[in-house]
Length: 388
Image 1 (cartoon, rainbow, N blue to C red):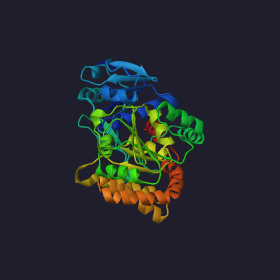
Image 2: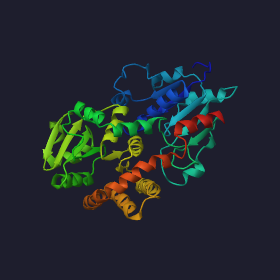
Image 3: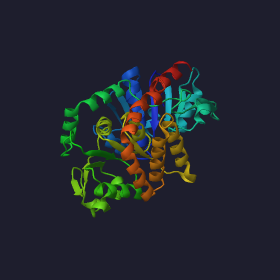
Image 4: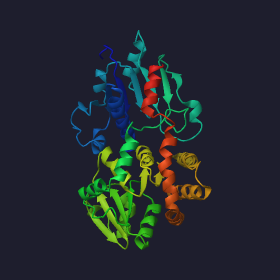
């Protein structure tokens, strides 16, 4: 292992839920490099999944540079080339190789700042746990860094100009029309149709919503990337996943389904910004739906003992703090029934959301500024490293 130290940052990521972990770390790497001029090395164990959100990635290479970021295929051989830098970020408790921890312990001068970037939660307990250190048995300190919605946490990933770019996009109907045309979606963006993006896990609640849209009064277009959501949607069209390819459209009643190819992160942001309502899953998409300033349903990753439901309720309580109680109840119940796979209640709560949509939309527009509390995650990380 090399021992010449540099000022770069290392970010380590193991891919667990296809795109969530790598989605967050890739966005963070790009922002730290672009806005703070940090030299970033991103170590990833699964380049195949990564390649779905970064099409330019060469999955055969052990090392390459994309968007100014050094991307390493993480395995036992490649980590032997690791060089100590200024900061090491361990994405979501992915556990650094012992060879790196041992090397940090040998540092005669200041070793890298070692952070474990935790999963996002709106629960209040993170206020008291954020940035706490823990000493490894080899004597190196690791700090637990909690993203979150309060000023006492590590903040939320949001690029400096993102909200401005989103606002300009949502005012530009011609850009939205061109975006839909390029996806082969035959819709007049100025018509009175409802666009819904869906990137969820399987759920009977999703099937119930599709059946509601089929018989609804409003023309609804569901924009769905190839993936798990289709398993709950296609039975409504009496077809199965083997007959479906990206770019297809299926119609039934007042619902049209459009299947989409996987896109990069910028393309996904535009999709969320363009749709009227978004159904999202995981952590990265969940946060991007908030920055889209549109109503959304969060399909949270299921965990043992219903821990995910506690996280869901903590978020909806925080999200609805400044919202009229009548509308807040609808948002809470809709998200809860969807995540509990309750088909009937989800359809019922969806109908209430439709009637309250202008109020919920107005709240969604105000939310991002409150959620950020003045500074984003990358800014807080850089300041934390500076003040270590």
